[in-house]
Length: 336
Image 1 (tube, one colour):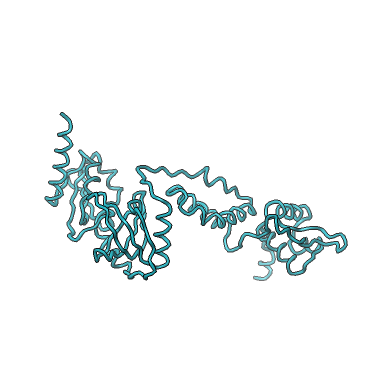
Image 2: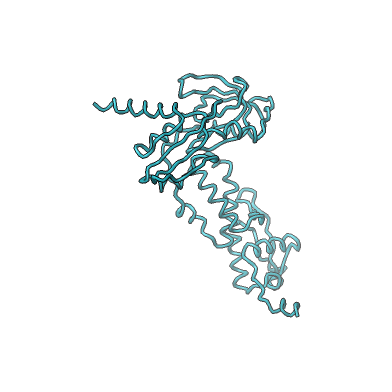
């Protein structure tokens, strides 16, 4: 009963990708293949087979010729000067190839030229793979839009050097500009990971100069040298403990609890925002919305609080409340 049911199920036709690879396999294994053998193996009509051959010749540079003496198709010798024939890999299906190209488009939108030269060979293979399935790869750029604001300029060369050192496990010597103090310092760090935060790249690692975990904005790196000394490895758990307990990209030694109340007019929107992974939220009887979360450096937090003025009130700690009040006073002083 089961066998008869299976026999009655419709057989799914072979996709063009599989047919192209089958044609390539047959020609490589048998050296010359008659037309009828192709039709039997591929289970397609003669017009479909000829369209596949034409596609391989035009788009994949396949040197397939018909040998009248053998009455069969075979590979011709390739011209060493002309374009090379190479099939895209079968390790991805069309959906996976599409997803990779989409991810690359997003990355190129985030930082143009970041991986362009390195991913170009892979991209050409993905495009060839999608074309086998008749998928329009150009639709990705037409249907994808990423709007950025206040993105800082970053030399691509610096990112590539930091990334290579991070992946290879080598220490780096950097000259770094501190925007808060205006000072330029030399640091030797063991890079652990790259972080992308608010449209800017950072390298997290162990700073041997300061003997502690630090995060450096890559766009603030003025020069970099990759050293041969291996990195001092820091576990991801320790990195997260030091860098993840604070608010935003900055970190400090003293952790405090910020308590912010938002007005009813702003509450519905604020309730959909995740300020911190460890945040606690509650609705007050007055209709205001309360958010509580830890922080240990208020530089970034202060800017975010001010951006919600006048619909936010800092309840604690007193130091943070005083900083917000002082910022408002200084702003008012600029308006005579």
